[in-house]
Length: 233
Image: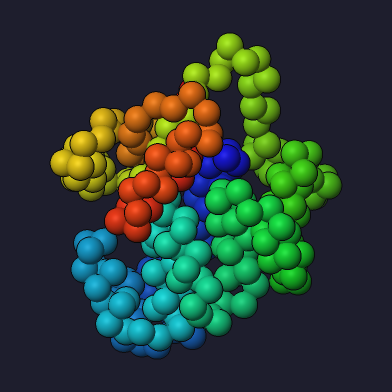
């Protein structure tokens, strides 16, 4: 599985460079009612409900970004594929989702289609990540070098694999998911990490010797849970 730190860092830095609240959404020509919902609602659950009710291309795109931020990449990808909003930015998110979900061919197709100059550095970084090499874009955007962290090559450092069911900024949501996973017989745990100055609570469960065993165990859960296989550190 591709290094999720790469994608989360890209997302955090990319969003930090954008304007906030209603000023940004208005500048994107979003419907006024949707702008108000995005700017004024602090509860994630209420925001999801309002976005679903809006059922506009912009609302579907924002649902995708919300699930992406939570680390639920399969659901995020489904929303991004349902909308035609936001042109190259949508392609960028689709590409990133495909990287994390280990779909390199699909990721290359999406990232190669991006022509927006403001997004070319990110698409270049994504394409380079697929080939495990440093992107040429670091010559113009040195900060991109920070996203290409060498992974351990010593087998003794590899402990195995686990299932990750989400990453949350809110510890309460993480603990709620942990309880849900316990109720179906899993042994979940929370990993607290710092990414770009922000705290994330990753919800993981179980230990497997190989990636294949972890994938099979996750698939056996059916459609009730969205998961990704990640290496244990």
